[in-house]
Image (cartoon, rainbow, N blue to C red; front, side, top):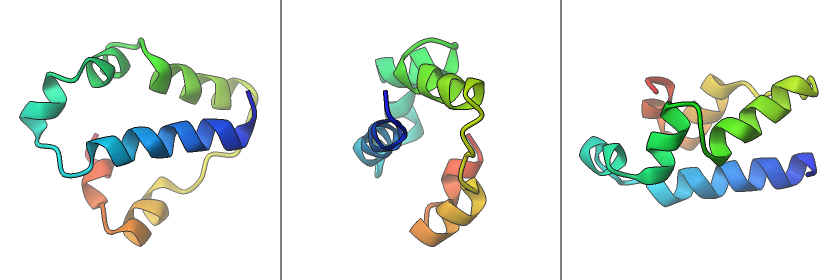
Length: 73
């Protein structure tokens, strides 16, 4: 898996959930899997950390995108 593929998958996952409510996200199988330590999002983040891939500044990215709510999660 390449770094670009990891970022693309995470971006696609975020795009899918933009505009969703917390209730919607609570019932989403992918979100539940990630929160409980399973699913592709958790696996991708673990892979990035294991291979010491420099993670982007999440706060800066969120503020640039105008989506500071992601910082809460």
